[in-house]
Image (tube, rainbow, N blue to C red; front, side, top):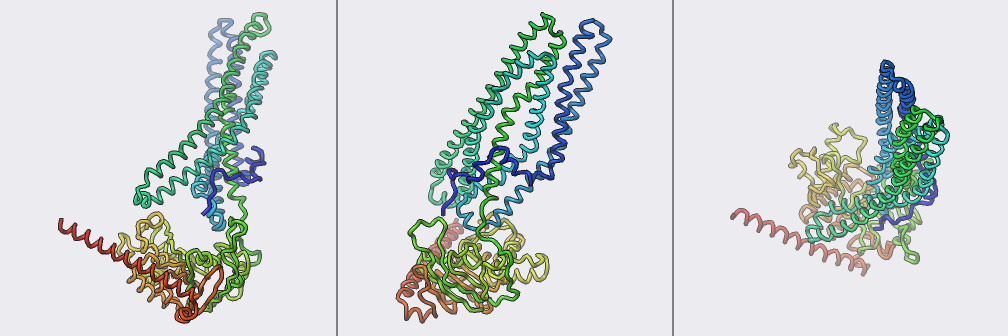
Length: 626
């Protein structure tokens, strides 16, 4: 399926926003934290002003006791400097105390908002986006925003104010020295604007490449069995190294850009110091300023050195944060095409009549000229009826089963439940009435109990009713194996349930759908990984459930077809035949061809299962003989 890559263009909305306007979008999340951030700025500014006041004491010290030789007057100056130093340290400690905690609250709020949005966006969105890109936005980008709010923003504002006040103090000592220092600071600001445009592009590319790299790691970890089975570990490593090398090159490009601004930030102040020293000595010799004033001037310039030098990394952090903010809002700004209606209808007691009326569907990225995948499907499932859906591979069976729950929305026609268009129901109610079990069974890193009862938020997990529902669902799905796990139904199944076999995962996924007790049960070939004997037991148990539940089952085995009251044949995007299995065998050549292909596939699966069983027996005998 198509995925977003790092060369996907940024949305026009975010790309046209300036840095200030982009960062301003954080305001709704940071609003509650701003009072403490302002207090942190006040504390930081207090520290800066205290630092700038120390040269005043030093001026009085040099022009007073040191010039007169009166040592008795030195101690008050020493005490004043010590007191100011302690006060500065207190202000710095207060700054940290004020800003650290609110930043974490903002990060948490933004992360919760992002996760909620990801849960709300349709499946089509997740089909297009790489999981690593989303992961990098949820972790590294939000971490960067938090650090900027707590550290970068505070220091950028305070250091800028400190530089302005410090420049005024320099003019206070002598206008010529202040002018020299200020004139040489202008190129720094000019280069800063040039730096922004260049660095923002590189920063965006770097963060996108980091997302791609995270995707590569995730895919390799999840697919480690496949890579090992096919001996493709080195191939995966080469691809990873190539992506890592691209990211390394971009990071070096970032470092070069930062080094460029650091060159100006370090060189120009040194040049200013040299010129001011030469000019200051000349002014002092001419009697324009005192030695104490000259000494205080350089002490003030030294205090301003860190604020000036910090502008470089604070600007780079700000531009990185702007990019992170744009990436965050790219997800939040994504239009949700599957939403709840303004005035949703309700079905208090659904009977389970499911109807497809002239249903058409095509994927958003389908090329022009390609016919719709579903091209006018008409099909009705009566309450309590079990309908098997068969067709050749690629005929659109799985897509059709995704429409009743609105994992995708129809592009034409409509799907109704008890006569109500599913788009007129809230998604929560709709998915409470219709449950699904997929061929690719996905479990979560949680207990067996939590996985099976996932769709029953109306139950207290510790209640007897929950236990009864859990046990019934496990029995129907023939998932009694969970009681032999170390902690029984409390056993954590591990990431995506990969600690279990494919058949065990499918049985738990089927139990999850059964436990939801829906009016309509949609099963997308949920028994494909089961052996023949287990499948027969599951089918026998399912008959009890399906007796009172409307069911649409995608069938890839003739044995699954036998579960159904009727069978629907999907051909060329349309339902071309509906009837009992025996009737369709007698009336439809295409149906006979499809069933024949299913029988051949079932025979191959049975042979493979026998081969695996024989191999297991042989291995056990060898171990016993040893």
